[in-house]
Every structure is written in C-alpha cells, then in structure tokens.
Amino acid sequence: GASNGRRSSRRRPRRVLMFPLPFQGHINPMLQLGDVLHARGLAVTVLHTRLNALDAARRHPEFQFVPVLDGVPAHVAASGNVIDIIEAMNAAMEADGAAALRAVLESVVADEARPPAACIIFDANLLAVPRAAEAVGLRTLVLRTASAACLGCFLAYPMLHQKGYLPPQESKLYMPVKELPPLRVRDLFYSSWSNHKKMRELLARANEAMKNSSGLVINTLDALEKAELNRLCEELHIPVVLAPGPLHKLSSKCTRSSTPDQDYSCIEWLDKQPSESVLYVSFGSLASLDAKDFLEVAWGLANSGHPFLWVVRADSVRGFLDGPDIPNGFEAAVRGRGKVIRWAPQQEVLAHPAVGGFWTHSGWNSTLESISDGVPMICRPQFADQMMNTRYVVNTWGVGLELEGELERGKIEKAVRKLMKDRQGEEMRERAKELKKNVADCLKAGGTSQVAIDKLVDYILSM
Ligand code: UDP
Image (cartoon, rainbow, N blue to C red; front, side, top):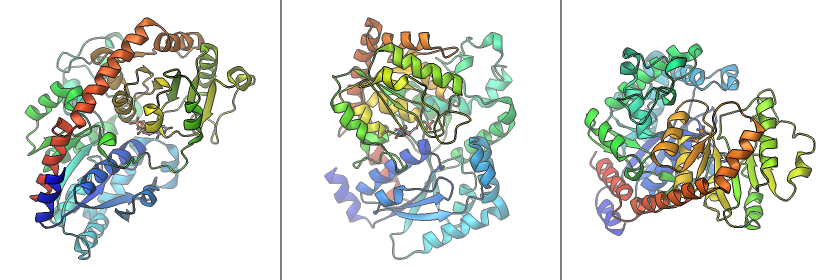
C-alpha cells in the first residue's frame, strides 16, 4: 500500500537475490514473489541455471538475470528424473566449497550500480547456497513452493521411518498417521525404492538449510492451512515464518509461466462455451501417462459428452517425444466440444467463467490456482506431494474427488459426470466458491497474505 511505499522510500533502497529450483512449479512462485517485492520498492536479481533456462527474462525487464553453471550432464537432464537432476546440480555447485557459486554471488553483490543486496531467497533444495551466501556475508531466506502440510511431512520424515509408517506397506496404506492428520500412509511423500535413499538425504539436508536460514516463506495461506502453519511455527525456531500465498494472485502482473508457447486460442474457444460447462484437463509440467492410459483418458473424455480443454504436452506420453498420436475417430467424436492444446495459460483458463471443473495431477500450484478461482477438482495424483494435496482437497476442503485405481474410460466418464453434472459435484462447486471468497479476503488490504508481505518487506529492509 501507499504507506509502505512511503516507509520504504525513506530507507535506503535494497535488493533481494533470488535463486529458484529450475522447474516450472518452483520458478513461477519465486518470480511471483519477486514481482510482489519489486512492487514494494525492492530491486530483484534472479540467479538461474542453464537447465530450463528462463524465458522469463523477456517478461521481466525490471529484474536482473544472472546465469549460474548447473553442471547437469545432458543425459541426466534428458532423463527427466527430478531427483537425479537435483543431485547432479548440487554435486556440481557444491564442488570446491561452492567456489563457482560463491564467485557469482561475489560479483553480484559487488555491483555498485545496483542497490545493496539484503539477502538471498532460495529454494532449500539448492544445497550449495547457504555456504556460498555465508562466504559473501549474505543472509538467506527460504521459499517453499509446496504446502505447509508437505513441509510438516518432510520435517517428520525421521519419525515416520522410526515408527514404521515408511516405507509404506501395502497392507497399511489406508492407516491414519495420527501425528499428521488428516494424512494416511498412502498420502505421505515418498519416492520409489530406486532413488529413495537419495531423496532422504536431500530432504534431511534441505531441512537443515531451512532451519539455519533467517526466515521461511511458504506459498500457502491461513485460510487453507492454519493448523498446519501453527504446527510448523511451534516446531521450527526460525526468526520469521510467513504465509503470503497464493502468490500468483498477489503478483500485480501475471507472471503466468516461464515457458513461451502458451496457446491463447483456447481463451477465444472458452469464450464461446456456456458458463461452468468446461472441464479443464492438465497434469502439470512433469507428470506423464503411458500410451494405454492416454487412450483411456481420450475416450473417457470423449464419451463423457462434456466440453473439455485438454493439455497434452509434447512429452505427455511415455515413449513419444513429439506428442502422442491422437486416436482414430477421436477428433470427429469431440468436434466443437473438445479442444486439445500443448500448453495452456492456466491461470487465465481457471479464471474463465466457462470453466466448471479441473482434472488435475494435484501439484501444489495447480491446486492453489484452482482453489483461488473457485474451481472444483478431479484429482489424479502420481507422485511427490500430489497424494497429500489430494487428501486435503477431498477430505479437508471438500472441493474435489479422487479418481483412484486403474485408469479406465468408463470410470473416467463417471467421474467427469459426477463433478460436472451430479449433485455431489454441485456441492463441491459451492464449497469451492466459498473457499475462493476466503482466499480473496486474505488477499485484501489487512488480510493475512498482505500482512505477511508487509512483514517480509520490513524484515528485508531491516537486514
Ligand atoms: N501450467 C501452465 N500451463 C499448463 C499446465 C501447467 O501454465 O498447460 C502451470 C500451472 O499454472 C502451474 C505450473 O504450471 O503454475 C505447474 O505447477 P504444479 O505445482 O501444479 O505442478 P508440477 O508441474 O510442478 O508438477
């Protein structure tokens, strides 16, 4: 607000450095936070890797962008295995006492043409940052781009193993984890055996980096996770823990996403559809289907009789590098009623009045975006925090249903009807609209999200 503008301009201008983990779901919230801080008078320098290099530079002429060598070999990058990619990146960046990163930070900090750097806001998975930052005298703040519940689960990881909840046993999947309500064993964050050991190590070190930081910012909000946030505050002894989410709604200019090829023709198409009639279908930036499941989804959507907008990325289906083959007869069956695109301007799509439901993989960004616009969901989680997000959507907030078990066209058709047509879906839609109002209240002047940003700005200026 105006008072903040006056307050900050009286103090000397400051700069924040930001270093996001180079994946869509992590980059977007970091840049959105950058927008918010910039609007409050702070200068922003974004460090970025060559991997998934940011196209965002074009859309953010007001930020400075500085490349950092990530050292991820091409074959690891191409594997798409997130844990392996992060491991390779950390190994390279931590080499020689994080010398290369330290050199980058040194030159960034020494730049006298820009306001003095107050701190670096980073993703805790980037393990080299604390050491490099300390060497150049920079304080660190951590941005968490998943839910507070997810962070609670990470912190509880050793306990979850000690008490035998993890590794998950087939016979106990539906057992409640009484220390982390409302989660059950199947909702816990877990990755396959092959890289579980790496994951556990990464989690432990990322937790450490977070605990040693000067502050924690989580892209969530009181209206959704008050109890979880309270638990975190009790457990962590970090100077500040702030929840200014949903960041995409706070950021004055829509950051959208950092990939270039959004297909805006879908907005014109949506303009022609009846209100709340369209099911938007997207599984985020990483999740993929096998060819058989892809067919089931295609025919489930076709047979449902409902209008749909479906995002099929070029790498959506395993085994196809340049997009899967659309099955014979599909286009004719859905003509005028179904649209398939490569990448959507998702925030605009979810805000469009024609959209009445979202079939999602339940990534945290997608979940927050859907809730902020009052859109109920069909959840089809695959990995990482997607199962626990689904649990909250279905059980705690009551704004969606889970499509469980094998993907099969008849089941898909039923789920779509349930959400888009039946009374049960109507009730979820009502609750989603209520939740949307609560989110909007947090975003208003004096609301919890705005207050969190005020505190963050004051804190940064005090550094
Ligand atoms: N997204 C988009 N267009 C698409 C699909 C996804 O802009 O067609 C954006 C979406 O708005 C969200 C992000 O990509 O901000 C996906 O993040 P999320 O946490 O939901 O899932 P992830 O991709 O990390 O699995």
